[in-house]
Image (cartoon, rainbow, N blue to C red; front, top):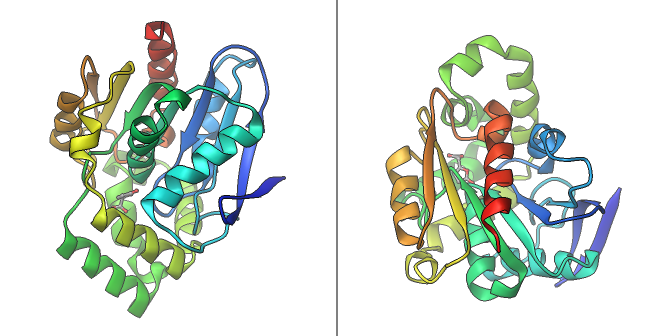
Length: 259
Ligand SMILES: O=C(O)CC1=CCC(=O)O1
């Protein structure tokens, strides 16, 4: 197990040293870094990899959850593991954190793969409703509705065992950590800053994603100079689980575009 106290929090991470360009993976609301396992399996074995449980998720601390701290944690862990630059691949709020890192610490980001994310996700009313529900009823009560947003109907029908595992991952997230990341999502709009990103970027949407539908991801790609965009058919909000080969191919393709 790998952990470090940095930037005011103890963070759980996984680092695989190697050769060549590194990849940093940033996960979504209600998940931990195990969601990237199948993508990492598809990458060359020598690719250096850093995965992070963001604050309030997995085994990391849950204090002081703000977007600047979530971004600062990634920068601190890259410094800690000796990564001076990496391709950053983020899903959903992880994609917002990736945009934040690219705009505040551009020295650390050589390319981006942005999965099922936007420059702004949802609106204040939606996040406030979600925060009240998690505080009143708990994540377990909300899990069935959230899993419908995360996974395509086909995945839910064909993979009941995997669905149960990801339900457990979601339900074991602390209510406070989950609600604090919802508040961060409510309060974050990176549209202006994201327009300044110039590194090679590929944006991925899922045709069956109910949380960040393809139009939102397409609008994100339009903000970033030279960004490419694809929609994965019959895929929900987590392509790293439903379409890991496509995500790995995107990472390899962006690696080739980096000077
Ligand atoms: O729970 C959802 O609706 C999906 C989601 C939105 C932001 C995020 O990180 O996950």
